[in-house]
Image 1 (tube, one colour):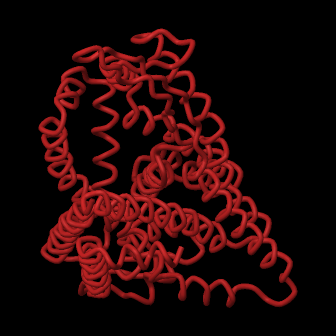
Image 2: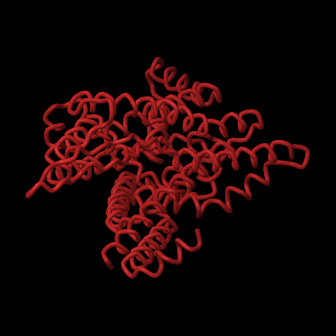
Image 3: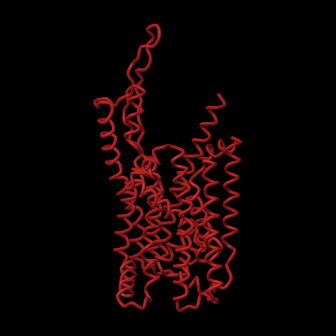
Length: 425
């Protein structure tokens, strides 16, 4: 591992990219500690402590929402906008055609995603501020309309700023920008989370601490195992006669299919979707309409149930693994490219049968991969339910995201180093 890091550091382009990403993360953490006026930070932290949903929201924002900084919303609105457009491309034929246009079509969809991020940020900021106003802890010290509008505009601008930073990171090809921003926020909040965890547990409950430590090790090993697992599909290239009877081709190779192609994205998508019902319920819990307030309270009570929360979390991780794999993996294109290059899978006819075979293989891989990833995701939740601490559940999700992001970034850095080594020859 250290040899790989040393080799990456020796390559000038990769080294400059890593230093650039590090500078961006430092800038992100600086902005995360610029609080907005009119907020009682002590009351805000008490409001977030002990609430699993709000703790997940703080995790998803990179810890910025618990200090209500200028980037309080984090990248959550942008990720929600991405989910919306990826769903629409599978439903709306016109958007699907635009996506198939290649790079130009993807640029158009990315631009629409950025534009949708702005109203989503405004809506989420309004919901969050309304939830804080309805709290009995007097978190907002100023509630005049001018101050509320200023807060909404500021945090919306902060989200757009983080969206720009994330895209700058992605351009350096050393990891996914949005995932790395969440990763940076998690790492920055680890010392505080650990101190809170130790403060809430006494020596008589050391068994749960040991069990959670074992769960953490299992999570790390499991995520590494799943990310490294590959199914090699054999591919044979037919011999071709070129020129003056020269034979070419006839090469036997393989097509590597990862057990989980989506990486950490299903976890991030699942957390994003888990937050929406609770945030909306927090917004309507004090509604004047009786049935609406009762429905919101029922949602909050249901989401606080550890078993319901874990089952829903598992189902979303499982579903988003299939969904995101369908977005990034296209068996039809792979089968078409193989046919054009004279390649075929032994025992499978080229064209549509090859596409159907690849689709069957990837669905089987997804079943085991998604089930394993979902189980790893909810394991800390179940342990925390037994131990009675929400910090364990949030910490387990943090660990899962950190390990997945590190693996994804290392893979991209290795690819960059390998490409530069080939260019040298």
